[in-house]
Length: 139
Image (cartoon, rainbow, N blue to C red):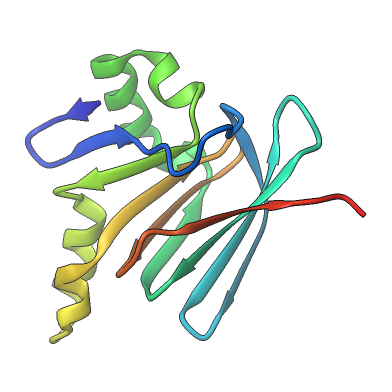
């Protein structure tokens, strides 16, 4: 768990049996639903993280989140974020930024911040519901 004055980061374990680290393969947005396809870093297993009720989302490389990575590294150690992919963020700076950008939207006030810290990208999602995790089976 990472906690500073503004944010509380916790590792989110939505389902049993997930790999430790994933790479973001694809991001598709349609009608308020965001689907993020992830590939296991040590295997070819894939999962899809589906976020419904998306208020806002962004994806950036670690370079653009250098301040965050430095804070997490200093407070929790490298293993906290480097060896795990899924996080929930309370008192989120991202959620606050989205709220300050809105004229009026009650969904924003109820939004939850989820962060997917992939080996190649960081995807932040502000949504009204927990994402759904789905295993993709090879044909």
